[in-house]
Image (cartoon, rainbow, N blue to C red):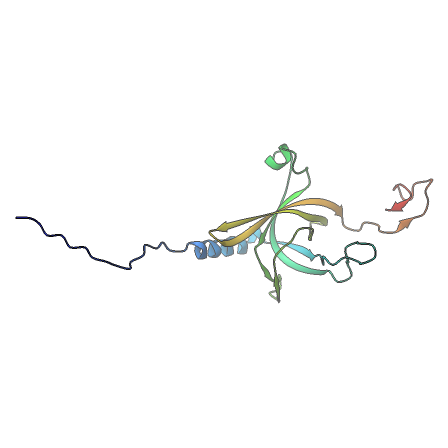
Length: 175
């Protein structure tokens, strides 16, 4: 006797759970750990240019106090060994979207961008490269490669003396 087979049609779809929420929760847990709570000043640069000189307009930049993980690079780091970064530069881990300050004040949400500045331990860094860390299409956090640009309290006065040093800084320009 022959066996009878029956074909069943179905609209069943194989689906896997979205793990990005677990990763976001994990990042929140990690970033709230005391050892990762380094308070920094995040300076959001306005990218509007002066229409005469083409210089960046710094008249309405905004500064925020936020938490981030900052790792100063030394000669043992891979990025330094391959020459992409120098000793003293930093790798900074930031939330993908910044919407709250250290004192829990809500701010208008923004994403970090190139040329924004970060101050940590009295040193200013500028963001030169942003590498998003994601699960699927969801960004969890950003790895920012930052170049050291200056220590706190730089002089910004014009030096008119072209022949001699002024305060140990060469003449003829911004010091």
